Image 1 (cartoon, rainbow, N blue to C red):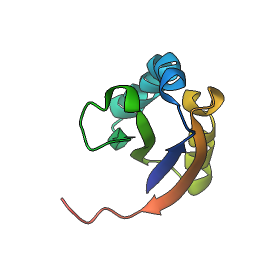
Image 2: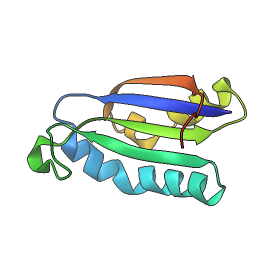
Image 3: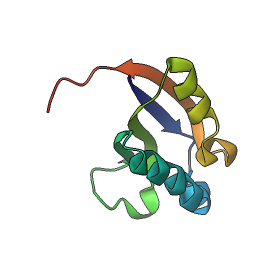
Image 4: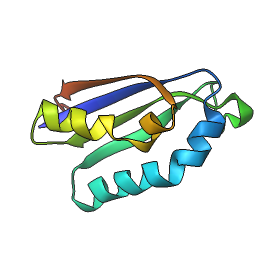
Length: 99
């Protein structure tokens, strides 16, 4: 089943994000290689593809996991969690309708 991992950043998270980004992306690449990743990306803090020093306000990942518990365990071990980037992480079942 698909799950949405919806994360909200702490204030001024950009430096923490940049430091943890390589390990964060490595885990996402692994999901992609396994054919389990639907989409992933950050929410710019301003209305721009390149928010510069404004940084990001959170992230969204939609991926396939065996269960809600498995998705939660994966989310809990994200390098952004360990680095203190996220203030909150929610994991919810997701039903893809389109496309």
